[in-house]
Amino acid sequence: MVDIRQAGPGRVDQVARVMGRAFVTEPMMTWPLGGQSEDLEERCVRAYALYLGPLLEQGLVWETADGRGALVFVSPDGTDVWDDALAHVDDSTTHDVTDDGGRRHERFWEWVASKIPPEPVWHLDSVAVEPGWQGRGIGSALIEFGLELTRESNAAVILETGTARNVPLYKRFGFRVVEEADSPEGGPHVWFMRREPW
Image (cartoon, rainbow, N blue to C red):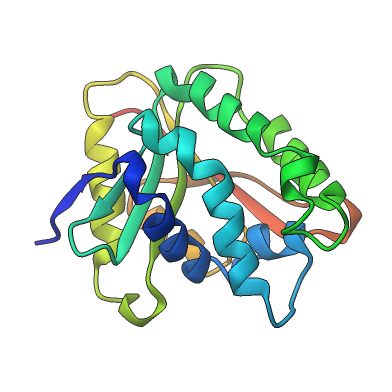
């Protein structure tokens, strides 16, 4: 059994480290930052640290008790907080973590945002597990935990992934692909997935 708890504001650095290390091979993270380089993992960690603060303060982040896994899961009521957190990560703050001053980052995430349905939805934004602990059920436990939060809701759950091997994993949890597309300017191929309410 994986013990999962809400992560508090004092956990920014720890959660950012888990997220950054886990997503250093995720095209949706690496392409907007500027591809492969020696400092890519460090830039991924710094990018997560930029936007996790407001999300942690508003209770939108959970982690395993041992700190090896984390989940960013946004409720329909949390979308304003989510939007504010993303607005906080603008060109001036992404300049140091991208290789083009944040231009590719901004365009890519604007494109992703354009695919979000207009109705209220839950958003499974990120599920991350320390690389050495992946494949041991931690990620699945985090997904199950997040889906349980939606049990009494009439809203669907959405997610995006740029990693093909994640698609069958999410399908096991009742998600289906509603769209897949290549992002603009040679960016990654992205699967947009949805799970209907319980």
